[in-house]
Image 1 (cartoon, rainbow, N blue to C red):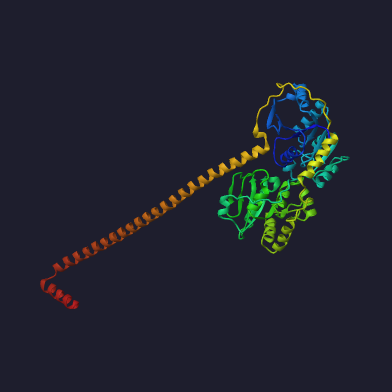
Image 2 (cartoon, rainbow, N blue to C red; image 1 turned 60 degrees about the horizontal axis):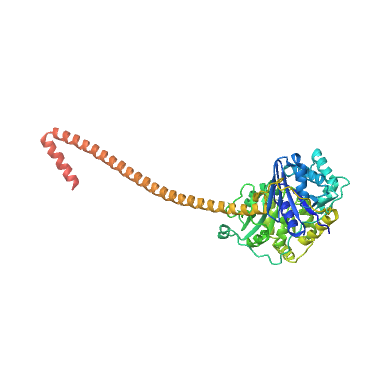
Length: 491
């Protein structure tokens, strides 16, 4: 095996691509360097040394030989391109030409078709100019890899004559996944059944449907739990009390343990954009949890092949998804769900590709296409300045995100406590105000009645006074007779 080091060229974003690259770094016994490329931002990372080398804008254009000499000193013998967006493609082109080394490319998604594929009404509709650019990059690569047969076939169809080989994304085997403790706020009002969604959910992963699905479960003992976060809620907590809970960001490798800790009986993957492989599916199966998924891309391929769940219809909405969940989670298809879950308890390396198989396959490609570098040149240490920038490390950023989400959750909990106490005070104050208002109304009514009675007495006194004046004007014999008659009438 040659000693070529690998230069991985990727974007600045994390997610499944970052997980894949870091699995390679951990398990393939070679030196690895990561070039994080974006518009106006370039950082070369030495992951094993934990060092980051940010490049000044246009460094490859202004001092190409200095940068190339520095990279050659690292014994780079092969470029591995992981993103087909413009900046990574451009950097990989430059590195291959400057270092005189070949490139292999891995397709991780459908962005080779269109730069805005994740937001497009038809994700698989290509932008002709963009596809022409990405096709040129793929054809210029001696090897093109894809993690699923579905994505390999799509690329071969859209780029005629392209040979694509499949290397599935591996996961570390763990025979004894321990359940991790759920959030205390969730545990306080744990529902009867939990249906989980995994990862960072944006519109392309069905986030627009989640709240409506939760509303469609009203009247059941089922709640949705997002093990990850939503585009509209990053922090942990109940988004819809009793129906939709957000766990928040979690450390890499904790997904299966959290699925067990929350007691998920079903995992929901309502993606609107086809998946190229889906680590979320592997994590759900590793935890022994069946899935209900969109019938697109690698999700459909893997579920149809390994029977670890069910596919939704081609067209589905929140009401239909909620109906399927009701049926599978304690409804008329509960026995069927339990049978599938029991089948997932049996290990199957075809269902969840092992990490060591991926490692062996990739190392074979590296050995086949990598150029064994000669004795390394002496690099000019001033050509590239080392600067630690941990925020660009997807692994470390995930830890920071977990911490920030926890702190935000604590702040929000304190705010909710303050709001609750303010609400209690307001409720108590309103009670006293209502009592005082009632007492004032009672006093006002008593005063009105007293005033009315006083006026009546005054009128009666006026009548008596007039009657007395009239009586006094009568002749004395007649007055005595009338008084006698009145006295006799009262006896």
